[in-house]
Image (cartoon, rainbow, N blue to C red; front, side, top):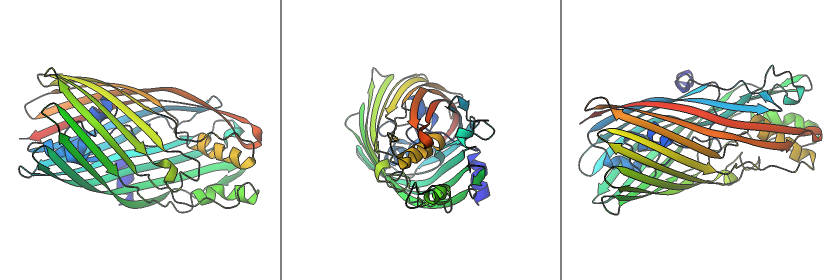
Length: 386
């Protein structure tokens, strides 16, 4: 089962955008900056707000992939983890006038670097790899202008950390785990043009045995940390609200706000990650079965930059910014799609996150300059059995 899931993820390493989470799931959502709490896109709404699949008609199948191309460097040495493929599959079915069913499987988050063979001993031959994938069936009930959706979530995760400590390799290989959570959403149509949405996603407990504890053990031996890190790396809870407004028959503008609770998630809080406020804005024009969209997404880097006045702070900076530098903040996107036939359509999006540079004080008082930018292209096809 694990081998099947790893092959389905199809990537050796991922970088995401809001912390370690993708800004949006699906080509339409990402084209509009990651909105989706109040904006209806079809079956891909299963993991953005399951209440919105109440708007689906018939049976819709959506499948696609995101080609993710992060550009990460430390001290001007590039990480070789620079090309990844993130899959997505979703389905929605209208059961009757009141109920709809959906199911989704998405590569939803991840991060990692690979500095093996860089030739720079300060980078410690570091290699990290976090992969996350979610599987979520959902059920939605609709009454008049109100809809409620609930989706139990099964999450698969894999974590690997390795580096060179003074000539001695550190790391025990990758570790896998499954976690269970849920997502719940509400949508309300104020009128035929304005929709409001609310969503809550529960935390998901994950434990990657002999990973974080093994990686931190040398720092305990050298009296930098008093204890090794626990192997828990909990995917945090989040909540959000959104509004979608249709006007002039062909235009839509949507805005989402969500908060990701890194600061209270096991593992992340130990590394000093802070809660993240995420703002997404998108606009779309659609006519005769063809659409065009642009989007903007912003969330401040959630990772604490320690002053480095103590060896413990220097070590935390090293773990955060050398091994897991999920520092992207600003994202611009655009996309388009069209109906090929009455039932078949294709969607496309392009996303760019300009470089964000961090200078951190790491072990021995040395400066570590980390630069991180991202480009991704997503394609999807959807077929509607109406």
